[in-house]
Length: 239
Image (cartoon, rainbow, N blue to C red; front, side, top):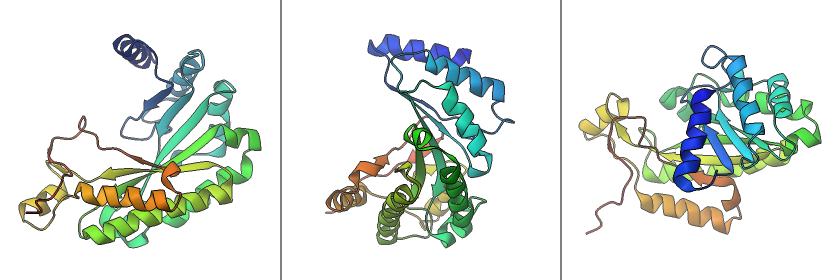
């Protein structure tokens, strides 16, 4: 709680204002009480509720730690004009990619049952205050650039489908693959069996989804503050 309070103060001092969106993404599950105690979860949201400048708080969690009861409680700690966004590492909407390549440890069916459970038990007022976002791992090992683009497009279409079915705003955050030390991607990269994505592919996805009127539900991110990475997505040599 103190760390969050300090971070908000430092960001405010650096920018001269407090950003309206606060993201607390611990590279784990915020809602797993073995990682972040319920007392700490409550304390952080109460802290956020008192800050008039913050209008949205984003957290991340695996689906097994998310429950309707917990969402209702967290929403009750926020002001009426604040939004709770939960990021979930779905990573791919393709069952083979999800379970055999990325090996997330849960299935698409389990994810869909979870969001249905949430939708069925939240009021319309609570749904307005909730956002669900899924991470999409762009270009995992063994997929071609073309296959990765196709998978990314399907993910955005699926997110819009989930939104219509549940009445909850959905979005996709695309995470282009990087080559990080100690990972399977690094091993394949060293064996010349894997090439990270290029930004022409990202541009193609953005253009296509804009034409399909799906650009309002997509985000892109590539973090450099957690992994010892060596190679990031870039632009291929087209000479």
